[in-house]
Length: 619
Image 1 (cartoon, rainbow, N blue to C red):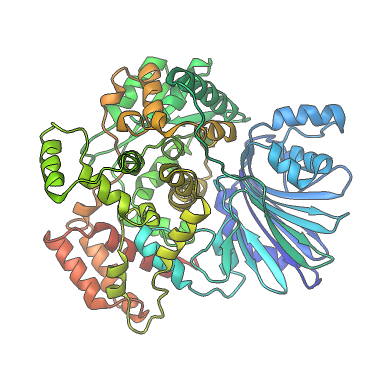
Image 2 (image 1 turned 45 degrees about the vertical axis):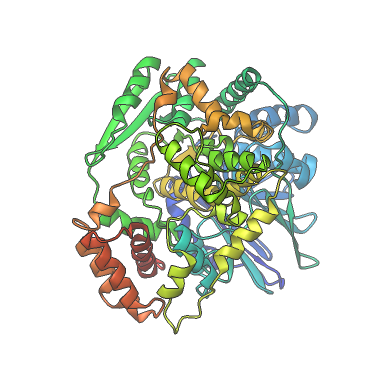
């Protein structure tokens, strides 16, 4: 796991080391164990290393294959590299290192880029230069776990793991559409970035850059297919458990010790329990906060004791204002999901003793862990019955539902079904379209409606044979990609920690996406199958546990402890001088929130984090 950067001159001019040195400082935290550069004619690669596999200098990068033909600059881990390495050793040539990096090089020489990407299981972003073909390839993993930012004009291409490396080398301007999305969703919308001139390579895609023809072609190598194949519950549970076990075991490949993140949830609990059952000495970390209203530590400790884990509890009382400043600087783009704050401290603590940790990200997206999934599934079933309730019947039904006498609130289902489908991707955390129209300064050329168009396109691009399946598919490329994976990668890698997600395993995904929605959401229960497995492996009473987010009481802090900090950020004058927002509207929102007259936590935090980003983006 590392940080990468590079330059490709499309006009044929020679790449200079100074161009790489300008970008290297911004990927240093991602790779604290070593540094390397490589130059050949119009192309230059830079690398910062976090040594996890092949700890010796043999694993250093950029790495060139034995023939001197192919050179790679790579960030990530290939979990099945051992099997691929053994096969290549038999039919191709013996390896000279124990690294997965060399396996990528030899695999490319043997199969070419298309077939190589189809064979590897991992999280990665890499650049590969082929001297014989005079081509450069940029590739990104299937789910977008690892970032790959790209700047391109008619003369050159720059790429980097951190967008700040591009901003240090090029003149970049604010993308009003990305800002519009950020204000609603608290993150920026890939493949767009906060800058007009930079983008992220899409997950499951690669760029082919022909240095002779000076052409750039982007291609997809992995479609996200969804279908509903017939299977009974016992078969679905058995196969899910089998594939998850394999995924957990594959993600332990490492030459350094591996830790496990452990909360009270099904996802991390299953990962930890299944790893312990396969004979591993498990090292678990659970984090609590002195201000948590519902502390997860007792339930996590109970599981750790049950499986005999070497368990560590961390109780933190963090300086949130300082953490907000650090997050704003390290993330490179505006980011206002407040769960980044506890994540920041968790990963910092784990990194004191470990470089690798297993997490539970992706379980909600694959198996339906958010309330929208069962809600839409029930709404879709209700609509299929072709029964529309009158206003009076809906009112009676609503009363019966509240009294526990009716199974479903049909009025609520009908209302949710009939809202425009793409709006089902909105999380409703930040500003609505109407609120943004009031918020924008008259002098700012806002890209109004960008977010609605973005979600319309996402829904259309991933449309399946049912609305619920479309929601599953589109959410992978919106909320998971833009928010949750960004939070994990940037928070962990700033501290030099690699977090691996067994749920984002291609085989497990392929099976989960083939399951009937009525099984994944049986009886309207979010994440039904994983909860059933958690009853077997974690806690027999797991079905009765409420779903918990991992957050902080930001709404209260902004009214008390954080109020001076937020006031200073919002009203010191710098935000007003940017002429992005109407300050009377900002003042009204802040006043309503601190007085308790209204709840504007996420909206105000989005403005605070944006201004912090403006103030630290060049740092």
